[in-house]
Length: 280
Image (cartoon, rainbow, N blue to C red; front, side):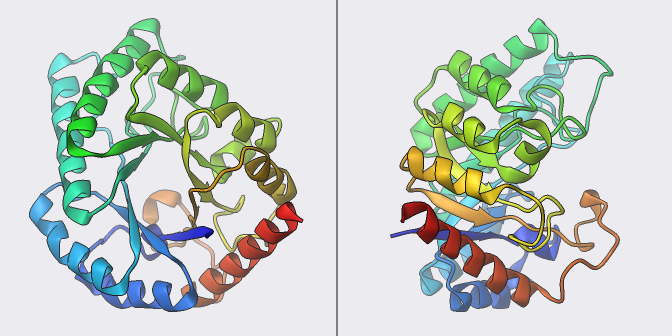
């Protein structure tokens, strides 16, 4: 059975119970799971979400990021320690939510730059902290799915080769990789080759168009993507990640689709059609 998810960031960053009707809509359209952003790391916040998702029979994938206040490769050891603890709390929230994956680019701070490439010292801090985080994740039954972003949002890792090497260096059974077609479309010569490169550690895939709008309406080479996924016999989640002006951090200020429901329906139809073609 194919697994299809929908990321809630399409509706912005206010992840609260006001989104419960959206969960019902996601289920009705035909998705089997939902990506839930974990920004509030108070685990009590997520019990009602678990109840609702269980009621709907939706799988859930936890997602988190670190902003400039939490950076695992900061030169300040106090910030590195605080970030590690913050990310452990995100794991606790994933447990309450009923997820078994915590995905995202929390290896470093989103949109924080030094103006230079990552140093060996920063790399070593990432390996050390993420290995300890993976130890904690293993205790809690959670798999880490690290994500690389494009060069305009991250500098520690911004392509498949770099993230693969980071995970190899961490060398932990609970530290794996997720793949986002939006970032790969900017950074890779071939999306298919990047997927094949990551296959050893790949546990989650976000399907995202080049403009973060309706999947299949842009210029991503989807044949390359789905052929590679079939080649590696990928059988985990394909999750739609689309954004709108409701997500201010994405800097999208123009209308790119009619409404969220239409975007979800058309994206899911497209993904299903490509999945069938890649298998024929």
